[in-house]
Image (cartoon, rainbow, N blue to C red; front, side, top):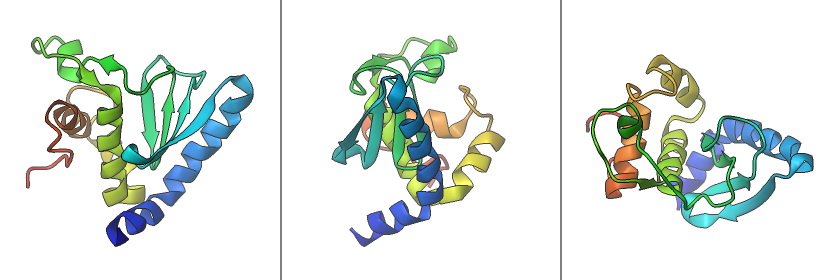
Length: 141
């Protein structure tokens, strides 16, 4: 419990950016909902972006209507093999955990690892977590 609280505080500057983005989207149809399992405030129907979701600290901006929807892994979409669909909520929850450990360091490290791509260890770890329920940390332990 104390670790969770520290993680929320540590990533709060990034969560504030997510909250601002979500609040700005509300006049355009976005709706906020707390998801305790994901430790995140989720803005559904976020009107901007190519589709899917983006996590900013303890805030998830989701373009769809149900974060529990299925999606493909990055490896599957890149043609690295057939993989079964994963739950988008599980993938984004892994990013919430990553943020809670790395706080403001998450974004520069994420970008240094390749941004939104199959090569990014943060995305591979989030896919692994969504597939197995384990392994959200992006570096070998």
